[in-house]
Each structure stands twice: as structure tokens, then as C-alpha cells.
Length: 529
Image (cartoon, rainbow, N blue to C red):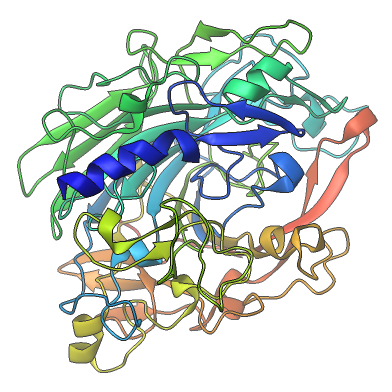
């Protein structure tokens, strides 16, 4: 195990080297490089990285809507940490399927202010927690044109499954326990004039810089979280200081604003431990300055606060593929088996490997489960996420729990302490990944050949509702989970609905219209807390 971990550290520097606009760049200290195919970053409207290397990943999401003040900046969930299958995975793919094979992360999200982030129309201070920031119109001459939107960032409170390749650059914090992190994504590009940040910034923190901190027991980061200040230790979990959670633990997840910055709190009611993180100046959070002309990259201390007061179809991140503010999302479409890996972190050498089988690790690199696999973006939709290996896919419950992990299960959030969201929506960014400019046939301009489920997928997981005791919980997987009450059509075609056309800021103040998602809005919340 020690030898495997030492080998892992040796390849980190290699894995955290990327390119932008053809210029070779090495990250400083081991940055969370959003231009790499393995990254777990907020999904931009179009690809980033050298030759569009980061084409994106699949994020089937559940959106929560309310017109009441506070719904856009205060959300509290109950959640159960998933358990694993009773049978261990094997290299042949005939054993069990664990969480790290289904999703390297799932997360709860919220739109935030960042006046140095895209669309870069104005660098005036963002008025936090306010719907005066709403600007999603398509008329460049109107004050609500999306290109005139305040600079926006996006929070993902990410949860990472145990048992496989260790952070960084893998997906697991521990052999047996889960961990979580606050990740805040910004984007340094003037969309109205198509001008990215200066080359030094692109070469150090990339076009999508990240503030990153594991959730700690003290609420203080164990290493600098800022894009330029981050070190390898920033992305290395510490069992002594970070919140680690066991399978089956009952959590309360609380996301809300404070005078110091956005606060994320995880209360583990099973273990009695509490972890937190505040996106504050005192904790070292900083924004990358958008300065396209200077020769060097700079950052400034910054407290991140929620962007909006409410959460609706109009509370968007203008540079993101998805259309949401308050949302829960599963990050699928990464893991694929690979039995031949010449170099840790390199490409798969299996005879049947294809061009998306990259960022691969052998069984020797794993913390526990002895299988080799790859975690780059699965643009061919042929990995484990797209097989009937999810919980609830086998109608025989005994066989289902023997070979499949438990589902990610969580309640609808409440805001202002106790108020329920009045509506929900299902949204999946399949067209964003299927697009012709990423090697597929989907035309995002017209919607032609954009399919749901995606081509190559033998199965596509969905959200269902079920009873856990007296409470209604959302659960993600198949339709045969015990206690299931509503399957919303029972397949992805029915659940995620029709193609959604969204407007984005375009070069020369010419709006862009893209089909990046399928979305279905329900007129009520079928699973209130």
C-alpha cells in the first residue's frame, strides 16, 4: 500500500500538466486543472483546453425552484451516505459495482457572485443574494441581456467515494470512508468580445480557475484553497483534520450565506462529527483577476456569496452548460475498466480501448479494490455509468444489493430553515457531450441528432422518489429500489423531457442559442421534506 501511494505521488506532477491554446503549461503546485479530461469541474457551455480536450462529462441533475426570497441562497438537505455492494468488483466486470465506478463525485450546487468571472461585462461589485442580478434575455440592447450579467461562479459541494485510486489525482480519500470538498468554479473569459484572460493565468490556473478546500472538522482549510495559492497538499485529504464519513451515515447538509462568505456545513448525525467550510477571506479564498493584458496572473482576496435571492428558470450561470441555480447532480460518465496500463495516469493499452480511455490507474494504485480502470470523460457512453449496474436495476432485491451499491439518497432541500421548494425539474446535459464538435452527431444549433438516452448507452440512471421511514427521499439509479413511489416515466426519455434551447453571450454581442440539455419541469414538488 505504501509503495502504491508513493507511486501515486510520483505521477501527480505528470498528470497535472495541461495545455491551453497550444502552449505547454505546468500547473503550480498541483492545481485542479479544469482543462483536463479527468476533471470534476462545472460544465462550461463549450469545450475548454487544448483542442477542446475537456469536452465535458454527464451531469444528470435535479433542480429546485421557488419564487420565495431565500430559496436561492439557503438550502438544507438530509442525506444517507451510500453503502457498497456485498460482492467486490473484479477486473472481468462480473463482480459487484462500487460507487467509484458509477460516479467519481456527486454534489449539491448554488450560483455565486464573482465580479472577475464571465461574462466579464462589468467588474462592478456583485450585489449578493439579490434577483437584481437576473439577466437571461436575448436582446443585446436590453438591460437584461445575458451578456450583461454580473460575473458568476458556481459552488459544487462534492462527495467522493472510497476504495480506489487516491486523491490526487484519483477519486478516493480513503479505503473505506467518504469525504467532501467545497469547490467553487469561475471562468476567465470575456464572452462578448471573445477575449480570455492573460496567457500567464491560462498557463497556471487555466481558463476555469478553482477555489478548493476539503470539508474540515475545524472549518479551516488544511492548505491554501485559492487558485494561485493551491499546493499538492490542497488536494490531498487529511484524515486527522478533514471530515470522513462512513457508509450508511445520516447527514444534514446545510448551505447558506453569512457575513464572512458562503458556508457549507455537514453534520454527521451517526458519528456525531460536524465539518464545515466558509468561502471567506480569512480562509484564504481568492478570485483570479481578469486582466487580459498584463504579463503575469494575479488574484485578490474574495469572499464568495450567493448570487440570487430565489431559484428559478431565470437564475442561471451564464457561462455554464446547465441552466440551474440550486441543484443536486450526479457526476457520471467517467469509469471504464482497463486491464493494461503501461503508465499510471496514462492511457489504456487494452486492444479494445478507444480514444476516451485515458487517465487510467492499475490495481496496484488502488487503496482497496484491485481493479484497473480509467476516469477520463466517457464521450462514447460505454463505461460503467451506462450499464445496468446501478442500484435498483435488478428486480430481485437480494441480487440487486449483492452486486450493486446503495443509491445516493437525499431529501428535497428546505430554505429559510423550514420552507419547501414549490417545483422541481430534471435536467441532463447529454447534447453538450453528444455534440458534433466533440466527435458525435448532435447539432447543438438545431437539436438534430441529439438523443436521449445517448448513443452507446445500454442504460441511463434516473431519479425516483421513495419512502425512508416517514420521509420522502430522492434516490438515483433504477426503478426497482424498495419503497419506490414515483419513477417519473421509468426511463431517461420520459424523465428528462424535451430538448432545451438556452441563450448564451456571444462574440460581438451576438447571442448564441444552443441545445445543451434535456429538461422537464414539474409544476409541483412531489417529494417535499
